Length: 121
Image 1 (cartoon, helix red, strand yellow):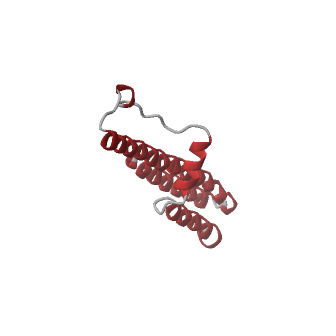
Image 2 (tube, rainbow, N blue to C red):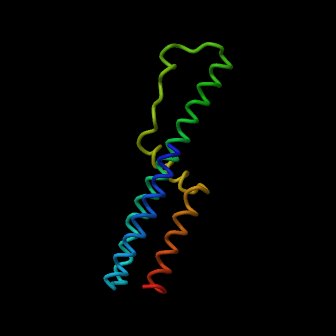
Image 3 (cartoon, rainbow, N blue to C red):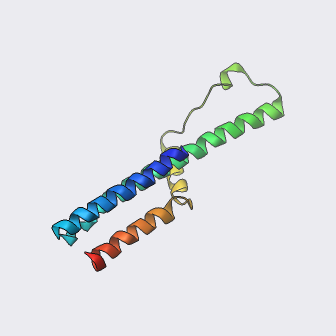
């Protein structure tokens, strides 16, 4: 999942910079806000991946705790990895979006777009 997070950041930078280059080439600075779309989408996707990683780590840690404390695990718990569903996904998304590996990157990218719109383009 860490590779997915790195790929989100790489693709986001590539798409935003490509959009800004095309906008600068066409001399249409009002269209710079289009670059916010990939920023928001990759922010959500990156937060989702981090939330899933945290969820699976918690499942693994609970399994190991149960194994060490009880000493025995039934066969039905050995291969059970159920990711969260419903509101749990939203809670994980919100919690992971506040991570230091997520919000500073996308906030910096957002500020770069704003600076590019008003000062460069």
